[in-house]
Image (tube, rainbow, N blue to C red):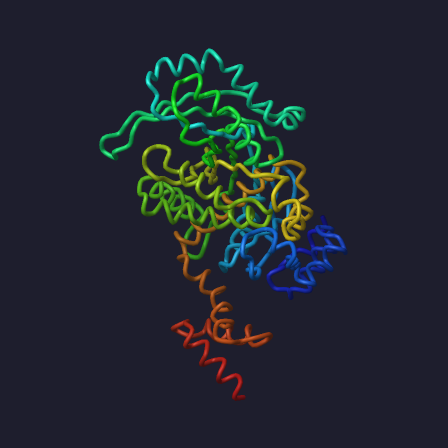
Length: 430
């Protein structure tokens, strides 16, 4: 990767950014042509993706730079509409590179399918029968999807989860069986659903209960990704704040997000700005990821920060983020959506585990950038600098007018749509 062509991408035109990616060998000449043509999703493909399709709804696709993850450099595609997200991720990644970049740990990619039974006459008898016949249950599950078993995956374990009735919430008792399945490179929704449906009648027979449903769980507690980083304390200084002061304030801000769910929600939303953008760009299911991640944040019984920040023995700032990431490297729209395919080529990931490492690292970078801004100059300064362009576009500016309006808008005391329209009107009258 020829990094000099990626320097200050934010200052270059769109055409020069594409040229820079090509010259740095991040993308091929063929992909550069695709980008110049706006990478459209063909109408005939879109029409077969959903019901009642009438158009495509586009989001900007950009790239974050400076990412060094497990000693490998990445340019990271991100699909997002919010200003400052990509800039923030790139800035934080550059700072984290000073001490060796991100180090990640990925758990075994085990997904969970649930079979939920009700009206169980005897919970103890039902549990004993499932334990006694667990080999048969696993065999029936794997027989339902032999191709994944041939590749080394498949159903590996059964967990029994009786759920007691709750008078407060007026819920009855349930008898839930978890099937732990290794789906390899796929997220595996179809694999999981096929397997749990296959064992449902057998479980009814064993337990004398009635099946309510059989489906995957998006709460993938057996598919966790962790990113760690170190930031030299001297690099954290900002304006009137020393590096030590910024470090301490970041740690305190994280402690607040651990203690206060009202702060934790916004804290974690910032993390998901990064995670969702990459998940979406790579053709994965960001709704499933969001649901699972937020459930994980509440696993203690209170919704808390997903990340942790602490002080190293030498005074550096240490960061860590762990989230469930049941994403896929193959399957679904990943196999045919042009933007998802391009993102895969740009990242060059070889496995779903590698993609998990990239995604969790972007989330941690996003968190660092947001916290640093919050505890120093305030989040609004950086946001509003980029928001000026959005206001200019909303006011009707096009082409070179956007930069002119945005630059003059930043000089106004009140930066709003009315001011943008006034600046644009004055420009057109010249």
